[in-house]
Image (tube, rainbow, N blue to C red):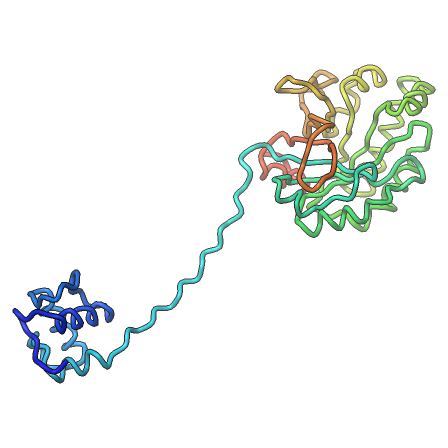
Length: 308
């Protein structure tokens, strides 16, 4: 490009001029090969930026400066991290024992599950052989964790507390759910054991476990049970309703039946609403649970603070 370009000029040279000005960030509108007022203004602006005579005429000096200038690269903006959305529905959890096949905890987390409660122990000496592996799995993916003990009514409560703590004491953190005692009459042999105690002895045995566990862990334990067990074996007693309730009740109703007069007016904390659920990462059927509250309230409950 050797000729001078100015107001009224047209052609391929003007088009190239306009395109270069636009690359450098000067407003020429849509390059069209016609040197109009907008192109003249852009040339003047370029000339001023290079301390040239700002007459709006693209002579040899202006053109040489224009085409020897390369656009200033703009820094690539850093992507803004997308925050992990908090669940808008009640938090869903699963409970797992050695009866379940190996679990892919990464897939479980991706499926939307937010907490998992693992069987740790039973009676005075049995420990779940998969507890450690499963606990490491939920830790690695960041699920809120919990552990439960299956209560045997004819074994001393203190022995059962020690059995549970032997398994979990070095694993539980302040952000985990409180310890859980599972009281039920299944399998039938366990129901037969409960029948060997009178009502007062049954309540007292569970109460001893709860008191000892709270003393050792400084956390108020959770009671896992069903409406039928609590009515048939515990006399629908309200003696233990100051402990949080994890209720197992499978029903088509939108809310479960809560024993002990709605657990003394406290209601349930966690509801195991099905034993036939499906979750990515778990082969076969799995127990599914719903926390009564929001995700933030679940976190607060796990930390032992009041539920808002």
